[in-house]
Image (cartoon, rainbow, N blue to C red; front, side):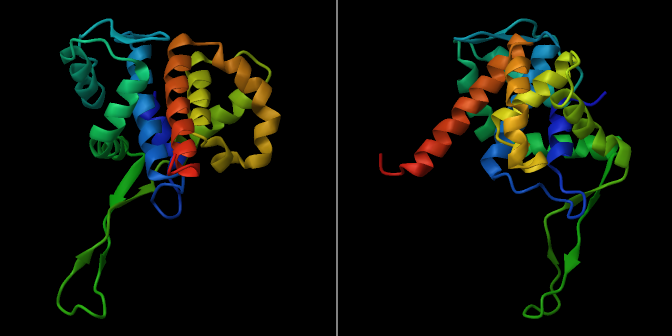
Length: 225
């Protein structure tokens, strides 16, 4: 089974270019951070409420990415809100999170890493390396998160709790219009409202991510305020 961070990466990875879709760097960071915390919640290592994110069980999960974040939460003695944790981790762990998830997907044979070398006309005898790109090896695994999203959003059936949480997370990050188009949002709005009430942990983490996204948009609209 894919983890939430792996779901997010596969959803946002461009199949043809091997890079992430144009959702904005901070949006990607928030989505990945929220997905890590959500996975820890479903693993019964943390819990969330309107005020705080709390440690439930410090026992490692066996997943290096999750356990790095779990250790940070365990080492922090004072209580912090879910939003504070999302903001902190998205700033401090962003590069490590992205690389670990991509490496995990490559190790599982779902993606492959390629780093192309270019020789610019202006610089002779020097190889210049582009950033690595990740291309799909297992197309079925790559499409699995998107298929689950479609089934969750466009069906009247009771969804899997994990799929409901994933839908709410990508909605909180404003990623759904990128994946399905703006016109779809009005159609799925009632369904999303229903999904938000299905899981408390997913709801709180998605709510924290959405609040940060709104704050970011407002600051961009009123930079001098």
